[in-house]
Length: 137
Image 1 (cartoon, rainbow, N blue to C red):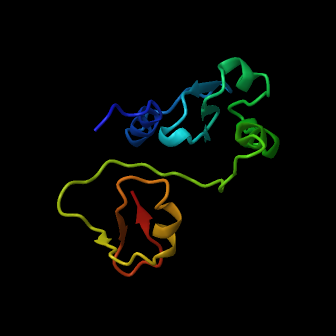
Image 2: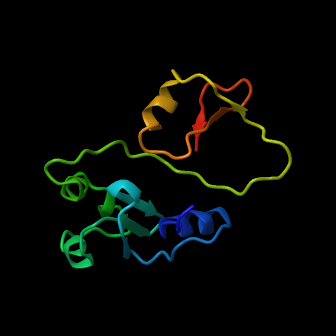
């Protein structure tokens, strides 16, 4: 397994209850594996993973108060041949130990699994017993 992307540190810190400062600022990181780029907003702080320079990103005026998720900035980030998926919430937490509580989904036709299969590795999906939604990791 290769070195982890620096964005993982933000997620792991959040799982521990340690968030970036509420300062309205922006952190620019390198693109994700496979050349994927993203804009992530914490309360009062934004993180953008991109191949663009810090100067090019900052010149567009994104900030930690919402401008990093504005339609104009996201269109700039994707460029003319890119695509914008969805604006979604990402929740993180540490495991509680013990056996897994999610039932592994073996159904390759599950719509959430299919939607993320192109971008997630490893591709494992689970569902809380009795739940109507699934999670992928």
